Length: 397
Length: 226
Image (cartoon, rainbow over the protein chains, first blue to last red):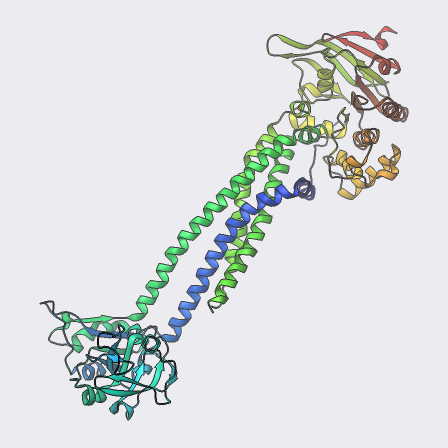
């Protein structure tokens, strides 16, 4: 007579696993919590970095990566070089260049009133600018208007965002004035922070003509902001130095401000890997916690193991039972952790005004990582349960 | 009558010096009710473990329901326990936090029977042992006698060819103990082969057949003596 083998249906495996855990709810919850914290940390870090990256990329999209700046470097004697006066016109002749704006450095500091001591410059500078500057660098106005062809010839000034704050001016117009040189200039506009040209934030901007007329400026060009056809940025970049200063191309610095933003994104991802590493450590500790709880569980439940063997369970059945408990524990921890991490990331991103990006692959990966940890953690306890001789298990009570 | 269990010259040694059983032969026919009795240290628990396939003999052969238990691999022994052997233990070994019905249904867990069918059979068996009103009670809501009845129900729910009861009254007061013994008698009358392992001479003498062990040998088998 052939003997039908012992069987344990997959549904029953899940059922006894769940029963085993529900009999020790608090302990299961605490050990699942370890996994949940690790997964939450990893999911939150990844989702926050995704959200922040999405924000940077969308701001790059908006600002464009086709802005180049040309500024004088140092001569071979280490002195501050200047751009030739022809530079602006020369650069404009490069085919793919769409717009060029110049700024010139004016040596006159800006003060809130005549009563301020001349040493209190608050770290602010004065720049002579073209009226086309905001369009070229993508600057927007927080208040008022920018200089136009008319106001560029009169004592009118536009303040960068930091400059306005340091001078204690929050609104343009209404007769607000600041002092440049011996003369009062009317504040006609205040800029928002300029991402691609942060040097403008700490500056008071006046027209070239006004600088020449009221501040005795010679009209030297310090920097050129160049907007090129996006397809030909690299080509334009390679010829800019020679075009701007044919005689001393080596004394010209050409840079691409969007590169700096991309570098910032890269620096952020370095932090991301650090936090990811911390999350991994938390996950590892959670895994050790599960292994610990399962080993104790096997010791405590020797009589149950013996009983199950007497009822006809094979070694494999008992191994699978304990492995299932550990997998269920880590699965629950993983799901809770992924949900918590996603929620934390969403809260953080929306508090920063970013678009909330929680990639599904990060959530799925978090749960999967938890289950993998549970499988490894449960392996040894499961083997111990499987190896226990039924007689020893029954005798130990 | 055919033999359900046949043990021939079985020995069990632990290490070189300790011999728990020193050559025991025993034949149990279908439908028998017998006691294996002896003082502690006589080897009766070891005999139970060997006959119940929880442990392998050092020497000798055991046939259960026609299967050569002493030669079968582990998996086959598990199958034999799942389908042909029932156990009742002194400590009941019920799972806390699970209803009487679920505990009894666990007796069929490894047979491959679907969940619903297991529960239905468990309910039927619990009614059969007089616990129709205790189906949903947890072990800690039951008296000692009731717990042992649940354990008996779990052991017989799969209709085993042979039932081993290891000191089934050991943790019970006299009254509850008598109740469990009469339950075992009832099951026997209904056709189950029952082996009771006990150290109580009084209980053993009340059963139709008595096998007395001493120092790892059969001292008396009332059946052979007849």
